[in-house]
Length: 187
Length: 258
Image 1 (cartoon, chains in turn blue, orange):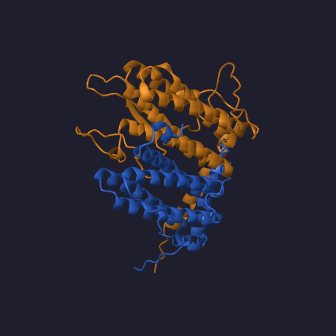
Image 2 (cartoon, one colour; image 1 turned 45 degrees about the vertical axis):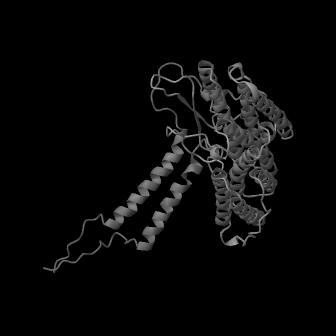
Image 3 (tube, helix red, strand yellow; image 1 turned 180 degrees about the vertical axis):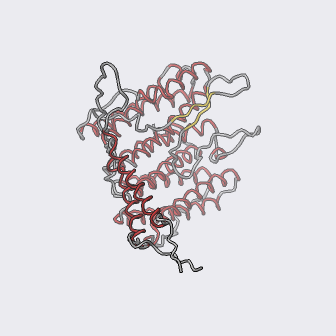
């Protein structure tokens, strides 16, 4: 006995395309449902997340951080005390993380940064720490000033998270270079 | 030959109608909030006034920053803190308190130029959440180390507050102003961490001889926005101190403009 499966002629067959279309429409309604919901609080949704106009500023920040990495590499090599060396290596690695983060953010828009050191740290650890403290402060100031020109909030947030730690690094290095706590804290 | 017809509900029909039911349900759920309470009430029902939409704008963020700065200035000047500090540490913390009060004044013109009303009061929600607890615990322990731990936590918190506020700030120039103030607190925090654990050995996170974590001057590579946790107060019967979690201002502790 042969069995033939057939659809009833009075029910129009929905094609796969129609089926997918209806599912997409359903998804769109689900996605749009918050719009219809009451009580949505107004916030800062107008701020652009990313903006390609920020790329030159971010490339400048990448260049600065790359040069900081090169400077710390020299400082680590010039330091003999193991605790001091470990501390400088920690900050060196932080700057490597900033280079990586900026490069990752810029992706294909990242330019090849210079690896020219900003200075040649040498002499006592005190003088090396003092020099690096100044460079940290300078870098944090450059980044802070650049934030005023950044359009995208993601880029500004990334730079802000770097400034917070670079300010700490500057104060910590100033303190171990021998300045007073008040001077290191700038109060 | 017999034509055996399938069930009238095919898999395709089921999927299609199921999708329609889900979509209709979502639309109805989104629109359904305007109906009143279906439960029958006896007697008078007081009229409830709906809350107005709160807008987080630059003035709200600046006013909130002022309230946080004022809170930290007040805590650092509180007798429960000042009475346990001595020498250079007392001088330093007093200078930090003055700096925070100065920041309150520095922010005021930024608020007024944007049509807002400046604040010169501590953030009441944050004082209730942890500020008063911190002061009470230091009042009980009367230990200088507790006071320094609290001040370090608060300075870290102020820096994180500006870093977080930046992500909500609309005006780019204002973001830079906020980070200048936040960087000041970062410097304070680094110096306090060095007072608790001095030298380059104290830069990185580590542990002491007993395996307890030490205070790190540079605990993270990037500025963190998570809660600041401090352990202060008199130790309990097993030697543990009270953990206090301190958070940056959130939607329930911002100073909105009415």
